[in-house]
Image (cartoon, rainbow, N blue to C red; front, side, top):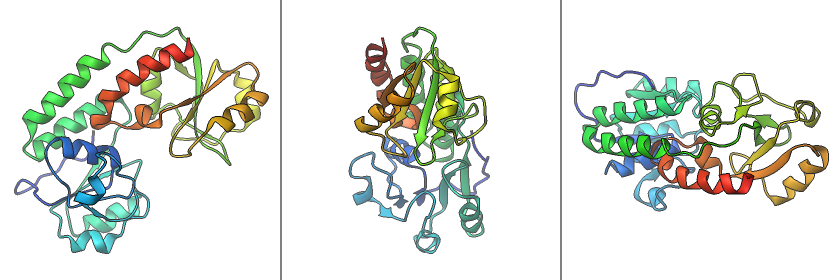
Length: 250
């Protein structure tokens, strides 16, 4: 879920270093003071809030100049050294979201911290309802690639892993985090599906052809990285996407 904070008062001046949480904050009717350059939802987020750098290279001095009373970070998306530097002068909520359930717990916790529990609960209830309707797919083994040169895959302790599991598939990568993997290793695994994520590396149609040549026994397809890796409000449209993906796979 995330680090538990004891705050003297409800935060009003919030900075978000996590794109998926930024969208959730807007849906809680809270406009952050600052967001990252990767905070693309809602579409006008970077116009309504100050852009304070990237997730891995936030402008610490710029953030602190905004005088926030809460900074929201993530264990996976942000660097520990940046979190430590910020936390010296401002409370930092560090989320840790390895599963769908922990995403919902984090959202409810932020709703409570920000005194928007009712709205947060409503969003989470809708997500629970919709995710209970995820199509039960035929069991398949999956390798989910997030990067190229070198290839990197989603490991067995990630949010992506839990989403794959909820789609009734098996993540063939039995290693933590995001291990490097060679095409030879993927071929030796011989997964039913190789999923090429649209982010953080922007896999394209041309990469399907490249990989299919080396992986003749696997079906290689492009997938929406936001549906598989964004928690928060983006979990709602993800269900519609998974239904479409079911038709593409089968």
